[in-house]
Length: 153
Ligand code: MN
Image (tube, rainbow, N blue to C red; front, side, top):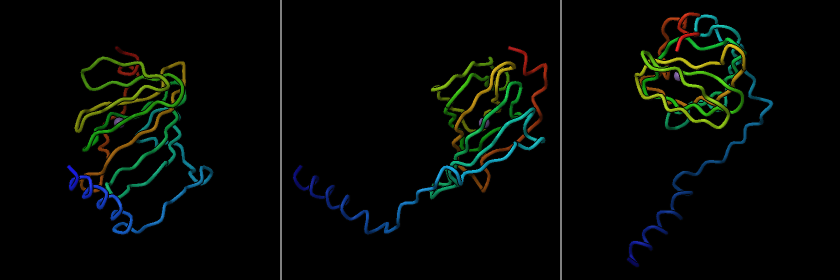
């Protein structure tokens, strides 16, 4: 037990030297986004970077969907976490039920599961989107979500 503790302390104190790098603080006002591309979004979605691919190839963005806006159908090769930060939206996987998501809700989209996410038809919704790259890509885009699919159940 004593040697295990000692080894643990050694490991912990050795870590900073082994990874001698400085912390990075990115100021909020430098994280400017843009309106989501018409090929991959319906309506107005504002997509802003949060952090780029880190050493684990994980990146994050913050997306705000105006009422009626949603992503196209898509999949993520390593899955995706969504953390809703404000408003009320909808998300749905192919052949699944449409879920209502609200501020504070957390969504896990498993690898390869086709889905979309967006606002409801009457409310806006913002979420963090966190995903990892596989072979250089974190998303594979498909067809737009039709109005019929969007308004369905
Ligand atoms: Mn997604």
